[in-house]
Length: 173
Image 1 (cartoon, helix red, strand yellow):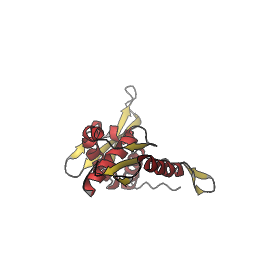
Image 2 (cartoon, rainbow, N blue to C red; image 1 turned 180 degrees about the vertical axis):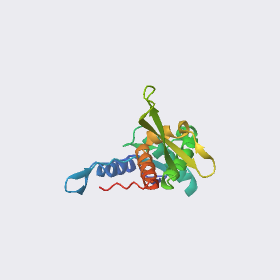
Image 3 (cartoon, rainbow, N blue to C red; image 1 turned 90 degrees about the vertical axis):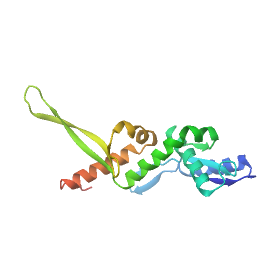
Image 4 (spheres, rainbow, N blue to C red; image 1 turned 30 degrees about the horizontal axis):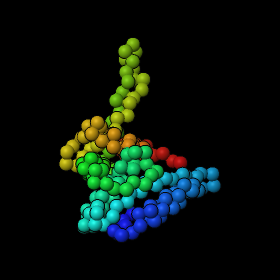
């Protein structure tokens, strides 16, 4: 939400609560499948939290990132302290979101080998970010952000689909 300076804060917050309540209704996708949704909402005001569209959108991104980082399903009003603390994380989060959209996450499989039989008895799937400019990025640099925002499941699923297609495996549902 973007609200103008001079709007009644309580009124704006109430509208955000009403919007958030809409997301509590389950969405039926088929006869026997329903999906539950939640909303992470950020609020900021002009000119207090930015004087340009870019500044206001950055403030909103920080507020939404903070809402997601703190478990999601909440309304967060931007503050200057929040901006100082989270600005760098938000920029990195935006890069991670683009990496998901660009399918830059890949899976590598590390085999488990039995010491006795010397046979492969399993494998561990390792998620890696194949950055177009920086190459492979260490998971310690992005996993935490994916977990905090809930995007870890989407990135793993997309990486698995890409790996399966690479090996000619197509799953029919």
